[in-house]
Image (cartoon, rainbow, N blue to C red):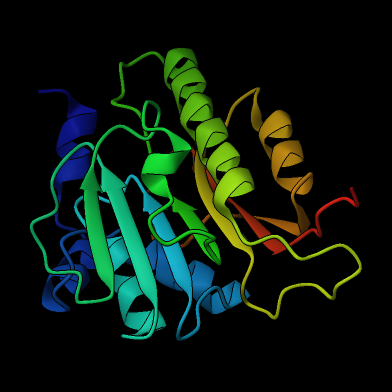
Amino acid sequence: MSKSKNLYQRADSFTKAAKAQGYPARSVFKLEEIDRRVRLFRPGQRVLDLGAAPGSWSMYAAQKIGPSGHLLAVDLSPIAVSLGPAARFSQGDALSLANEDLALFAPYDVVLSDMAPSTTGSKLADQARSFELFERAVKVAAALGVVPAPGAPALRPPGGAFVGKLFMGEDFTQARDAVRALFEEVKVIRPEGTRSSSFEVFLVGLRRKPAPPP
């Protein structure tokens, strides 16, 4: 086992706090910080969570949208934790699932992607794979997210949002531009809970742009 893998297995303060609060992973605090900074969620929203296992992001989002909301969590791996009555889980690969398979609660107010590749030890290869996953998430957001009608005011905040994880690399500008094409505002956030050895960032798109006129 490599030294880097040992580092990621250490139970740091974020890991301990997540377990104490009933979450399966420390990643919940990344989403919590993003939500605090941009106000992603509100009761009654429809949320799609790509790369949801082990379930911390879905648990947090389900609590924020409440019983009047709807959440679809998708991952290759099963989720053992309860997500509540507002949520459904679909096991599968977001890269191969058709948009129709992800459309259970579409159109979505918020599309989340914490998808990450299984790391290979090659930084360039891992970044390329991360960009592929990120690009797929953006395309899903484009196809299944709520779109304001032409001439209508922007979606009531905080709806019409996207959050996607990306390993920082040469594809960053292309990834940011893809989000800019869909949303009025784009933020780059590296949450406090991100490990110092990680090169991940989160691109956040806010206020979906209206559909072009026919």
